[in-house]
Amino acid sequence: MTWERRLAELGHDLERGNRIAAAPTVNFRYSGTSAPGRGVNGESPNASPAAVVRPGTNRMDRQLAFSTLSFPDRPLDRIIPAAPEMGYSGIELRTMAFGDPSAARAAASNWACEPADVDPHELAVRCTDARAIPLCLSTSISLHPADPFASSQAFSKLEYAMDLASRLGCRAVRAFVLQIDPGDNETKLVQRVARGMVRLLDRAVDQNLEIWLENAGGLSRARPWWHLANLIDHPLLGLIWNPLASLRAGESHAVSLPLLISALRMVRVADAVPPDLDEPAIPGQGGAEVHGLIKKLCGMGYQGWYAIEWNRYRYPHLTDAESVLTAASGWMGQQLEEIAESKTNPAAWGKKKLAALKAAAKADG
Image 1 (cartoon, rainbow, N blue to C red):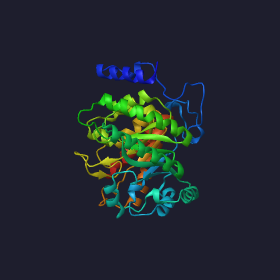
Image 2 (cartoon, helix red, strand yellow):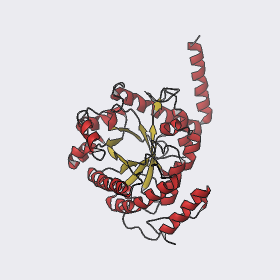
Image 3 (spheres, helix red, strand yellow):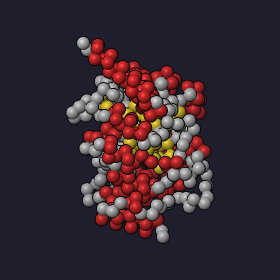
Image 4 (cartoon, one colour):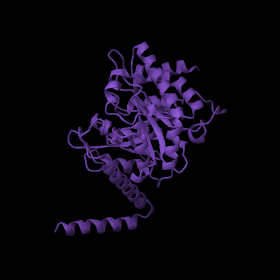
């Protein structure tokens, strides 16, 4: 059966509301008998996303990352050395090079950390010296357009971004699927993105690169991403999940995480001031259920990255990023350690929590 026919059948399944997960899995690139090239970090491209275990990624590891959006006015040669000092091993390199030209020109005046302007060798040396990983080249490219010409342009931009990410030594490149255009629908959109991704994922194999798509805008809920991940079923396709975006769209962690856990590569740890969740808050101090999010992820065996969100590019009035990110990495470490201890030694953990509650009650009088 050709993959074009399978796409049509799966689209029909979506229209009827059937579950794609119950259908036979389709792998567009690999038959399972050969592996032309290797995946990121030397992994076998035939491994399923759930089976991929990167070096040093056991349950206790703190795979923490932050975005250069936290430091829009700092050059990369100042951001990279600060990463380990703040408690981070991964850096998400945000680029403005592939967005709308007018927006890129407007950004130039207050954007000092453009990775497209950096010598790749120099970046690699700085990251090696700092023991920091250039984790992901994050673009503003959206693959949603229904217009054939606009759609072709979007995928061409992503292809150029993949070339840049490969030269910079990034593990992945990030894109969006932001909305459903008028006259389009979710089924057509998922099928169109799947078709376009097939060729790019073939290219990603040769570039030792992954492609990560992130929920945002009109596609913030889990369902279309679950459809897309099941439809493509490629080990080099991953998801960046922004739980705050799904909460704003009315979907809880309990709904989205079980659907997507096997495809997740990075989860944004973002908090916001209740009840509207519009204004950013320091992680753990807002109303976005961040502690519950981390607990659920650990309970499901999540082994990917946590990206602390503190976007001073979009919200320039926010507190200095260095102090917030340093405190957030310590808080995240404490959360992960407590969750791990509650599983490995529940009795000792219970006594410790009880003692902490008693101390707090005594302090309150």
